[in-house]
Length: 348
Image (cartoon, rainbow, N blue to C red):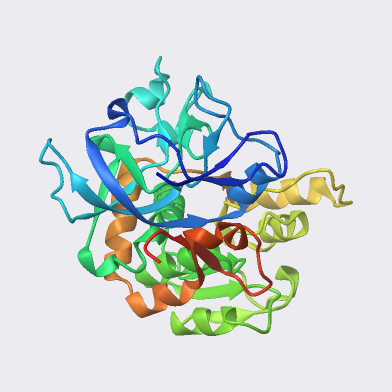
């Protein structure tokens, strides 16, 4: 079968193999036909050789951690042939650590987890893959065009769950949320904010292209100015850019008793001159919380599936700005200036 692979650590090793082996039965009982794979910055960084780990016994890693497929067979009866399904990316470590032992593998403490298409597990960018029932997330049939968005939605579902849990430290009635960055993670974070009934603001420097309209369709107010120029203080900020200046401005801008969730990953290597003492004073005296969030566990994937089912499916479809057939795979991994979400289409 065909599969998109790289040799981890080797830049320029991206290849479409025509003779990749069929998925081994020990990968899982559920056999799935691939429909689509979403592409994000993680894939690009792996292709550039920055990180990635091949499964034991091979030097190749199949890419793809944002999956959508259709069940071909499931002898366990968990799903039925024809059902839509996505595969959970992260698997717990074999020891396991205390968090992995209770299904909170997104909070792994020893780093021995594995991840499809990233770390020691083959990804979903292959024509067929297998999955264990506990890592298989069924999707509503109406999501056949947009269910590939489940993985990034699970990331923000976790972020919002943790925001809600932190908010329970006191009587807290948040009204406004600011989302910085209008990429896929940012717009999906705004979707979940709107589903919570919050007044949503989206900030991104793009003034052209689809982003302003996509934010507006959620009922959100769109801003294209620096965070420190906003004329309000949001109760919640979900930071999705990883840009150091935006991160710092978000921490300074959040309202009294506010919560800042950092989901964007900074590249590092850039020094910014700022008054750390003043920031510390503000965070302490205003009872603010800043925390980071990455990945998701089964609970968050299920919440994400519910959120997508309740969303406007036409709006979700608008996030997918390019669908590229498998035969033209290299073009899918070349980001365009107006791309939001690019999908590798296994049905074309």
